[in-house]
Length: 457
Image (cartoon, rainbow, N blue to C red):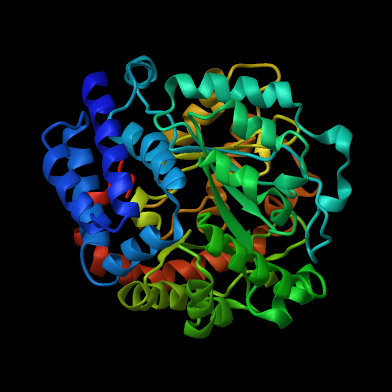
């Protein structure tokens, strides 16, 4: 398989040059890849379905336009790293990845989230970043060790870097440069990027996700006066430099219709965004259940993202409504987990409890702790995959998990989801269930194909 992988890399390098000159389209390459790779993939059924899904997404309708935008907005260096570091390892997993599954009976997660710092140069409304100091950062040597360990059995070695503000952490460039075989997705406020563009371009293994709350009024109201104009200006520069990026929206009751409305999405496409992430406001940090989108708004988001996918050349991720495509919740290292700035290994970025710390244990041992294994054993938390979350859709599952696993809180106020907010979350979950039950009954047969071990697309 290593021979085939190296052959694929060399072929892509040749094609990448032709793409740049306009001699070969990404559409043609993807079509050929699906044809040639299907008989060779290791995980036959699942990988063939991945390739089929990729073809369905990119080789029809707005997908073709998205491919053209990728060709225009992603430089050859970034395309090469995207292919070598992210795509190929998903098709040809490493031997250690295979051995990991044989050893534990579970596959390693798709991505590992790391917040090396919770410090930030912004003071956003409702955020708790101002409670942390430099001494609270995750040491760079620990981050290196985590990535070195992960590169041995993750396939791909795909890391999502968050904060605080990741580019406020002094070790971030060393991390990118010391791990050229890993791929990094970085959620950033975008304010510290412009002076580092040459460095970014030289790496190629970084995909940026820029956070904002909508147009100028709503973004500036939460992030500070002048931030929106600063962000759209840096987007223009990134587009011109062909550095790939997307956008990320903290979606709450007050901005749902704006951030998923056509005018805002059209602006993001115009600025060069290739991906749009939508995360529900959660009852953590400075937020309460009253900040969360209502069940009706959440259902509208599902319907709206379907309309947008049919009409807009943009890869949209609606983190909760897209749960059926990954067979429900992906916490507890089923698909991802989060390592915070103290080294605590949390089930997900929104679940602030832990039983293990990477400063004391290997990454592999943390993934397979009794608590994480028990969490994976309970998944999916709901037969209705539109109700994936143990925090807001199945809150009793989280209470049981924390109690039985004797997990400790990892952030100030984390226990509120277990006690102070319990009644409100139970009511919310009941309303969501009532709204989404008919939808699941309608969709579950056509979505059954996604209830697989390792569907990436």
